[in-house]
Image 1: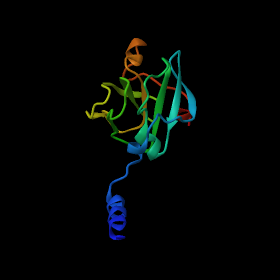
Image 2 (image 1 turned 90 degrees about the vertical axis):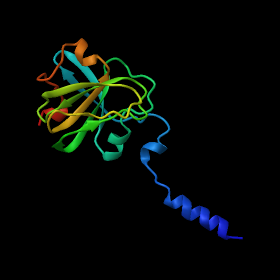
Image 3 (image 1 turned 180 degrees about the vertical axis):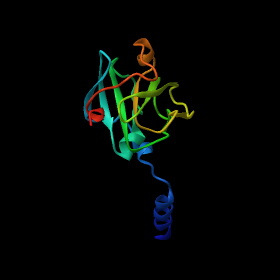
Image 4 (image 1 turned 120 degrees about the horizontal axis):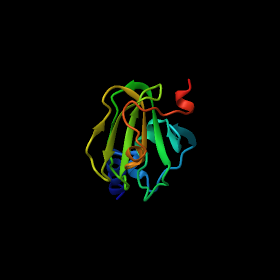
Length: 149
């Protein structure tokens, strides 16, 4: 009968599809150069909702001075988690002018939510401990193209 394929097609169409669940490997985005004082950063730039949703998922490692900068349309309280993220990260929540608002350490593959202390437009993720090893904390500055407006 043709009813079974029809039921399968309808049931399949009802299953939720999320782009991140279809993501098999890490994404590769255009990178920009940033600075934190005298420290150079190569940051992939996640601008679209889809790019931000995938973020650094499924990466087994990341070079020492690489990271990902997330840009949002408007300043807001931003919250991050580590679903499908394999490496420990530190996230700096950053104001529009490049001022670091707060920094949090995040555990791999955790659904714990880590949020900005106030509305921000940017979040910079680096390997865990990158900021603390360089003495960068709240009140510090990140400079580069997005912050030079």
